[in-house]
Length: 532
Image (cartoon, rainbow, N blue to C red):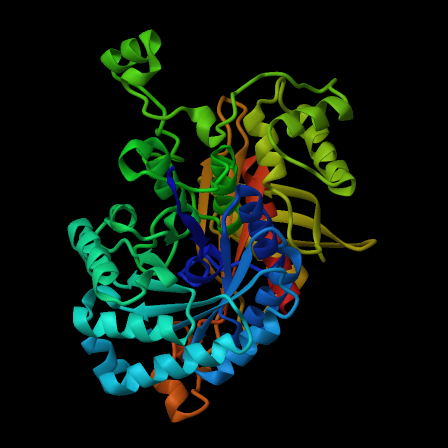
């Protein structure tokens, strides 16, 4: 019988704290529900003590998710564990995830603790966590660069103190598959009663081996993999959930391991996250990239037509890639629209369905036929904040011999607000008009900084939907200060140093790329308004 491997998803913690991947609470809830539907075993919802926002995220996700475990990250400090306990109080299946570095370089330069102090702290804090929660995970940060004998001692102490899962992170993406396999085998052979706890892996992709290291550890006996959707995360990212899962599924003969993931939900979950954080998936990305199942070579095409397994080791259907059916148009009714969304795997609440159907009818007036891609784009354009401002009308005047201008009218409730602005091109002029009408400003009185602006085609064809993604940042020069000397020594990098303020992502979708740009910028402005 194949071994069961748990999937621990840290998209909402390690993934979300990486640059450009921030989400608001509503977006995090949407991702958490998608992960629950996908079938992950554990969702790491955040780092409760790090900020009021993270505390609220962990608390709300813990209250919303009922069919999988919800974890909160903690340093080996009582105040961290206390905050996580409070955040997880209403969780159906809570987990406390405590961590402490074990490598010589981390102990000496970051923690400024001796090995003996690390052993003592590990024992004390795991026992403290077990007072509040039966499910406690301990992570030996930078395990793969730690002295093996010392690491084995730490693992032994954590298990004896009550840890039910012990994580062996490759924190800086340093190790190799062979080394990881040997390390897990060494720990299983060396640590007394090692089988009393599940050995877990948390691999980073700095050398492009996060997935390879993760599945190598499984081959050696690890039974939990920590990963993120699309591989997002610190620096080069984490092991990609979709790649780990499909590797174990496709090569079940070799790994003798299975997961509880519903693989037909992989593609939709990947697209959902991509749309929320505004980071497009590379075309050549394994499993979920647009080219993953594309065959251009004549030899490959001939082989696939004759027998798919000649060049396909998995099928598009196995990960839930929808077939591009041309089925709907301007005369299609609400029932047909709802039925097709259901066939694509979307369960939409009636109130939200009304909004999507209105967008569908508006789009159907501009396009002769709508593909499944169009329908998915409509659903994935959902807004996660209440819009203070909405677009009413706009008109741009541009050319190569004049300065562009935009006349813009927005609605704020029942009130109509109108202004005209100049700019370096029609998009810049439109953004300037939005700034003037909304009066958006950061705490220091400065306008938000446009950090990125990207355009891509959301669907195919001459009348394709154009999607614009913008990222706006309000910066703060305030420095985050440690609460005490001990806190400063043990703090995470994300909780020290310069405060980069608030970064939001806005999305806009339309057959008119200027309108898409306006909608994206307005979406981001509304998000900043909700933060304020």
